[in-house]
Length: 443
Image (tube, rainbow, N blue to C red; front, side):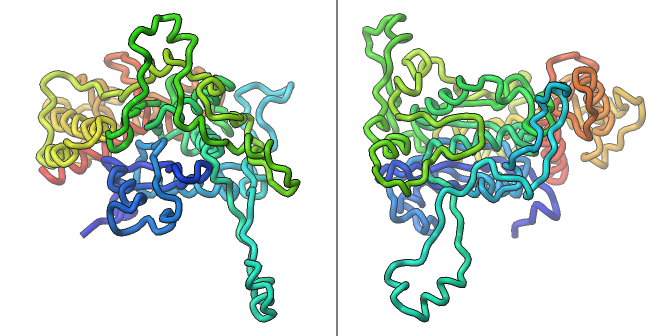
């Protein structure tokens, strides 16, 4: 029997939001979420039964990008809904003041009016009654009373714009979400938009709160989610100059983007796909030269970032070992997700054994109740320090207040006052606290 995360919060080991792109209809996409991306893609392609009824007419599909690291399944569903319906999401609204007025500092927060503001990505199309039904007066009367359903664009590049806007908006920008790319084309589109605005993720969109320097973490695995694709490889005799100046031939270059179709179309009623208020543009073509994706950039594409765990702490629990065996035949991208969770559990199990020797908070000096695992946390860098969760949050907020004029309820990063190592994202601290609570229940 499954326990609802509303009653008892649990951090999912693997739960991603994904973007599918149709290979038969190049300008059609599908946004979804799943704890098993490999099985879900097979369902969309009709190889596995159950689910994926909506995507049956545009098969085959390929998975271009995934977003992972959500604190809960409900959080992932919120992100998925906003990604699917950006025109209706309250998180993607135009701000009355972007904080850049001459008499205001860059740290000034914008005025956010919620749903009363205009959407950043207005609806580009709507459902209309069919021509056959309009001949019937009875059906026509019912069609007139039916509410028109507004829809968002399904162009892949448009979905990338929405993704970048979500990652820069509250509250998603404070969840320390990761982005993974499974195709060279998807990584090239992301790089194209990133070069146009390199400071996009320096501060949050509304509160102007500083974000971590490496946000959002990006990783690539061009073998695809199933590990069956062959990554593009440069010529064997390519020199360093050739890698810097030449471009690979992307399979998507033969398809027309929405901008190219708009130029060829003579219909005045065709709605442009770039009618949005987000300060980034869509590439007008899908070839590597237009995207600025060279062989050198593909060679230096970021790979999976593994979690650093001290030596001798890789004794994971039996449940984690079972999941690792189940995912052994999967790609390294999905294995890294599960292995990071296993390493995290191993680190927490090792740290929990030190509870008897260190039961004093390193900040306030008060006693730590080991029977309430959600009330304290260990040092994120595996030193012997233990803190009350509220004490560490208060100390981390003081460190952030020195660089920011405003004071917030929760920190974005956690600093250990004992070892003085680089800060760790606060969502990682919370994730470890809940994972340790689960371990103590199972022990």
